[in-house]
Length: 254
Image (cartoon, rainbow, N blue to C red):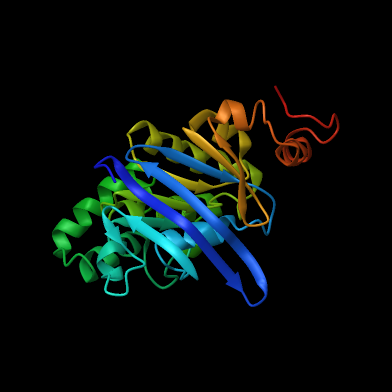
């Protein structure tokens, strides 16, 4: 594995009872790459993402992140997770804490940063996501899009080497999606390594270095965004994109 490779998944499998959710997945992600994972509901996208930081334990296969094999029984999972930021569909903010405290609490407890340093880092990342004026607000006072941007700031405050996004806009009203995607575009432009499960095809086409189309627990098609989304080779990919992008005409938007 080269120094440029930050994620390596080999022959990953995962089942829930009799349901095989991942069936021999291989994936590599280099530093600075943006990988978008698309596919129908139930295809295994979220499970694959959660296996990267072992929120789901694979049944078999290897997970290597930033040089550490997380599937090694002796691996220090907590240490490895400190370099992995994750943003969920639900915002998972602490409802009883202010925005600023939400962004500082993990810094202080996990990274052992002093309060002054944690606040400085929190404010810098709130500024990055356009929420400097909301540090004293409580989550209930924020829109869904603002809460998701706080969640991104919280993850960034931990100085991650890798960011995982699990359909970060799926719980948002349509008019709020753009602000979150704008923050993610900026992160991509700055060189953040990102693996993104998304239904936002235009975002994937514009930002992703590679797109994976998953169905029934396997990677059906993988390649540059313009190929997989713009000119897919597999019939299953074409059918999915026809329904998602342009159901009326039955073909992807050019």
